[in-house]
Image (tube, rainbow, N blue to C red; front, side, top):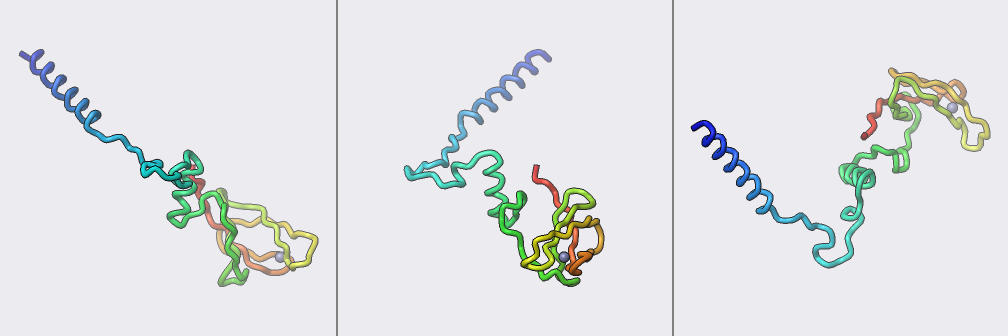
Length: 128
Ligand SMILES: [Zn+2]
């Protein structure tokens, strides 16, 4: 009796699973209209993830040009970091040939020791 019940349950579940697999239409989005597939349709792996993130307005791989900041206390230069500190190089004036390097730590905005521009470390999560 119990064996029949188990067999019936297994058979019903198996048939239901098979019918789901067979009943599903195949996903064919790529060039299904006969045209040339777009970049989004062709992209796979990391490129696909990057394109999806860009579509949402995110830039997880820093592919876009960095935003410009005034460097004041109210609008400091934002420095993304995965840790708690990062080495920053400040080109204090446009024509300078020497870069002033200093450590930027997590917390409040810090100033460049030479020109006084403000920098703030912001935690950045890696996408993978
Ligand atoms: Zn500076």
